[in-house]
Amino acid sequence: MANPTRCAGCRYLRRRCPEDCVLAPYFLSSNPERFICVHRIFGASNVSRMLMQLPVVHRAAAADCMSYEAANRVRDPVYGCTGIIYQLQQQIAMLERELAKAQGEIAFYNAQQQEMNRDQDQGESSLFNASQQQPFHLDQQLLLHYYQLNLNP
Image 1 (cartoon, rainbow, N blue to C red):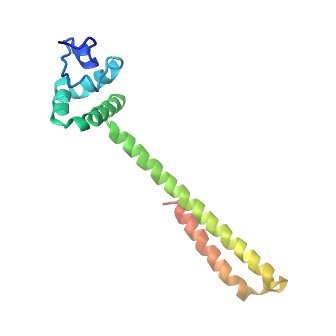
Image 2 (image 1 turned 90 degrees about the vertical axis):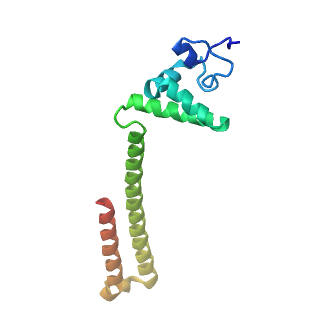
Image 3 (image 1 turned 30 degrees about the vertical axis):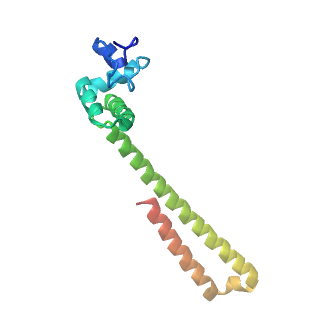
C-alpha cells in the first residue's frame, strides 16, 4: 500500500511512494525545493543508493549534508561549499591579524603605563636621568617593531 502523502522525491519524480521509500523520512512533501536541489546536483537514483548503503542512524545526517552541499553548489556552481570554507578561513586570518595588532597595542600601552608609574614612584629626578629611561625606549622600539610586523603580515 502506498503512502497517502507522497514524499517530495516521489512527487517530483511522479511515481507512487512505497511504504519503505528511502527518501520519505528525509525529503518531506512540505519542502519540495530541498529534494529538487539535491536531485539536480546528485540525481535521484544516486541519492537513493547512497542512503540505502548507510545505516539508518546515519541517513538523516547524510541527507542533511547532501542538501547543504547541493544548495551551496546551486548558489556557487564553481566553488560550492569550498568557497564558503575559503571565505571563513580568510575571515579567521584577518581576525587573527587584528587580534595580534590589538595585543601589540595593549602591550605597548601597558609598558608605557608601567614606565609612567615607575617614574612617579622614583620622583621627578628620574625623568632627567637618561640611563634609567633607556630600557623603556628599547622596550618601546621593540613593541613598535612588533606592532608594525602585525600590521603587515
